[in-house]
Amino acid sequence: MNQATSSGKTAMVTGGAGFLGSHLCDRLLEQGMQVICVDSLLTGSMRNIAHLENITQFRFIKQDVCEPLDIKDDLDFVYNLACAASPPRYQADPIHTMMTSVQGTLNLLMLAEAKGARFLQASTSEVYGDPDRHPQAEDYHGNVNCTGPRACYDEGKRAAESLCFDFLRLGRADVRVMRIFNTYGPRMDPDDGRIVSNLVVQALRGQPLTIYGTGEQTRSFCYVSDLIAGMMALMTVAENPKAPVNIGNPGEFTINELAKLVVEQTGTSSETVFKPLPVDDPTRRRPDISRAKALLNWEPTVPLEKGLRDTIAHFRERVADEKGHAA
Ligand code: NAD
Ligand code: UDP
Image (cartoon, rainbow, N blue to C red):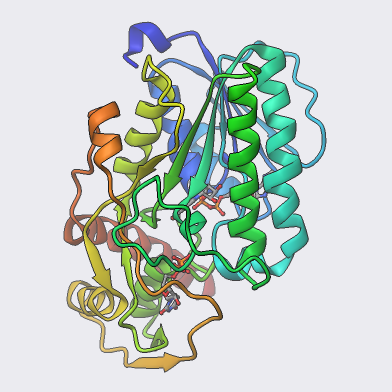
């Protein structure tokens, strides 16, 4: 959506103080929109939105989306990103994670219905579980263990998708669902345990780089600016795809290859240590993005080598800040 059509509209961003949500708030404000950021600060941080504090078009509400929302404003768009995304964090309180996706998404869908707002659900490649089809296209129904420790997240997100498509089929809201593949970049929480932030921060702190399992499992890493562009394209495309859309970067890397890149780019002398593979850790993951290309005219533009350099530059400053505070 260009500035002319978006200016003056109001968007709610749940999870807006998190990694992805804070970048989305930035882009929406740049387009002249009013932004209401709702976040419980479970895994997000005021640090991510501190630069928006004095912008009159921006408002922060500290709230858990599992509780009903009392919003007086008119809303044009609701972006639902609220949910812990790192495995150690979403497993810390698994029942709350499930309820965030189920009760939280229901609360927000009802809010969107009441306001006549368009709704976007941040779903995940985790709905494919440990995939026995590769790469993963949207018509693949997945291979998820519904009783394992990742189920609170994977099954929660699957249930959220069901709610979304029921609201759409029933004509209760204009709902769009994006399946996000591993995304990285500035403002990831340095200590939330995800692979890119872990390796980069470990390298910069001079700590051992932790690789789980053999490191031969794969992931496809999307840079945050590409992801947010895809998210906004899906929200604003005139014709509702009425189906989930994968957004991710099809470049596929083993964790060992990623670690090698981090070592090269940081120049660290940290050693590498191998730790046990977490239960149900997917062995491979790569998005088929044909649908996003066809419907949104979207594809990622930032290769891992470039995105990683920018991410490392960001974390270098954070780690230097830590050292400054410790001194
Ligand atoms: P994040 O943990 O940085 O952000 C999530 C935000 O949601 C945090 O600010 C957190 O405080 C907030 N939150 C969590 N539970 C809440 C609740 N019940 N009520 C209100 N706020 C709550 O993670 P992220 O990487 O920015 O992920 C954002 C969204 O994108 C999540 O829904 C996640 O499932 C989805 N996603 C992200 C990735 C990725 O690689 N980053 C991949 C797939 C899906
Ligand atoms: N991983 C790793 N070392 C770490 C953190 C993660 O080897 O310090 C592995 C993890 O087991 C998984 C991959 O990296 O195979 C991606 O993990 P992440 O938690 O970032 O995302 P997800 O598993 O949800 O894709």
